[in-house]
Image 1 (cartoon, rainbow, N blue to C red):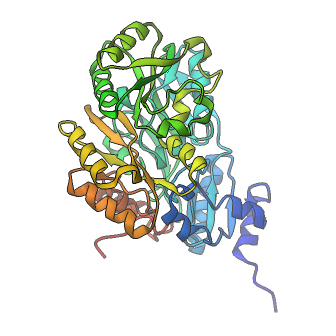
Image 2 (image 1 turned 45 degrees about the vertical axis):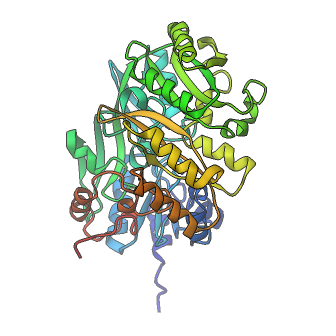
Length: 446
């Protein structure tokens, strides 16, 4: 009697061992992401079983072949970029295939005001090439060096540059090539509002293989750390700078003490017991930024000139969720939340939170624009005690009007990112068997 070949071996024989990896080390390594930022996700996912196979395609034809194979054999497929996401986006909950797209790393075209890219190009690589051509990328996460453009579009939202250009949904994706998971995968070229079904989708509604992003003219960026006696002064300065359209900027990140104490590389230049604002602004604006800081009782305590940009440790390496990472290095029990404060009452909300939780919750903000509106967003640090206590803090935040985007879940609708109803409909159309990253969208209409 003939022995039936396993689907894993069948796929490897079909595509070759260079494309399909079955060894335990590779499967284990590429079945994880940075979910350990969350103690809740860490407890649920650290013992999660690895994928049965890792697929490492080099081109779209191989992506389509892998998806068609998975469809025929009813095998789940979880898409992965560099694995720098924090929500378990790239963790296969039902084993199957992890589709690692990092080999698809070609810059297809850098044009006037845009870059067309394969999904696996690293953001740092794009920015370097764009700057050589007199342009630069608009927004990027603090994981800029490692993160891929496809991973950022499919798993991120905003970052450095969002103070000027908003989030991914605010015109920061121009076009995308998407593959469906069907008997014969379709190649879709998507633009306009239809992109909303694929931005921050965790690969649930289709597999992104190519993306076109806008570029802006190259700017010579200066970096600085502004220091203030109080968080209120730091926040008011941040708001005032955010509203100064005449000063080009990429980053305004206020944070209360002792958060700056976690930034060991800046230990000699950060004043103790002071709130700090991490800044990135156009080099010729230095005097105006310094004058504005003085109006709010502060000063620029450390300056990195434009000719040192990307040549030394930068202030953006300590902002967004890298702030959390530096805190965790000093206090391993530290975790974080993602929050939206109200522009017309953020100081009242800050005061209420500090009165309720003191140093259990440490406040770190990022001034951004969302849909054109100025928003004081925050990634508060939380000294983690228990899941119950964490969700008590979340409930209190929401009771005082602070909106929480929960980073301690892998489910898209629980995270509140994007318009999930539309994504759900698109998933049913593009993924009729529900095999793309199952468990990350929970259908509400079944």
